[in-house]
Length: 507
Image (cartoon, rainbow, N blue to C red; front, side, top):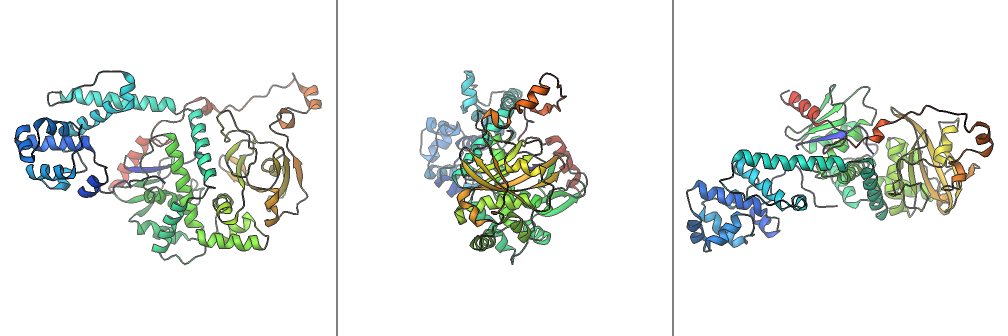
């Protein structure tokens, strides 16, 4: 798959950048990254193309024909010395011997079938292995590989249930908590890019964001027909990033562009599962924020505000010309690592359902049996719910909330989105409120959640009056009953994306 499509809305390993050439022959052998199945098929192809037998080549390299056969069948990894002898005997360079592409369509299918038969999925089926040889008809080879693809696709689709998504989100949030939501490797990549374009500081302009894309070899194309399920599409073949303007551009254009760039810089491949998809989203969002709000400048700003006991998310937003949500997220990246302040973040829909959340301060977020927070109703007495009823929407709303695990101070405000109104809140334990503006608030509430009597049940007086006499027509969200959309990028119509790229490729 040679495109990156960024979905509209969906809630450091060793990376290989898409489109990067394969490692050199020596490094591939030395690093133990040799693909012995591909190598074996390439040796066999070269040998047969030259009309040589196993005996001919084995004699030239000083090994037994049976040993050479094991190499050709991908069952033995040759040492560097043997690779050099094989290249000489077959009259090719080491780079040609270790080339990235299979020598033919048939070789590619043989390699894929061999890998599949050695994988855990095929093993779990308990089927006999097909002997792969030159006598295996091409149409049979095509069918076997096609059946393997279809089986994998159907299993992936069955696995992509809402529960699988919640489990992946829970696991990812645990990772974020373990590192205090701070990613040093991504910070370093962002700093490297800012230095490369000679960024001088202050809010990152649209011009500088475009300079970053240009520095990486990408041109920008603004179009009116971007696939409806995407925010951006990156064409890696022609080095273009397609963006949109107008009514669909409700997200900060700089952020959308920098997230698209982030997929490339961080070397993302098409995600193999939903967990990897979510991790890539987290990483690209972090990368974009690290460019919009560079670590050194943001930490300096926060440290000065802390010293003055005037920490405020809205000041951070205004200083770097970003959205309140971006500023709140960025605060969670830096607060614990650099300021020693533990915190929590919530994005809550006006209906009371948690849309996004993060915590490392021990707050008792509601969770289901999988540990998932997203999709759960938050206590109606928390700041993130109370803020919806505050008439003053211009300034942040601050409140203390007593809970079963301690008292927390939170600051929140609301923002409108195409999917409704949301509250965005940052909270800290009582011991850290001394560093924040708004600590003098007199607003206070008490939450007994997860006790049912706190807010899950209606007050006894209301229930006594109306129980048995109310029949609301629920607004059913049918997508909750369905599996997540299939495909490498959930929610993205790949046919639509490919058709879009094809239509624009010649322009």
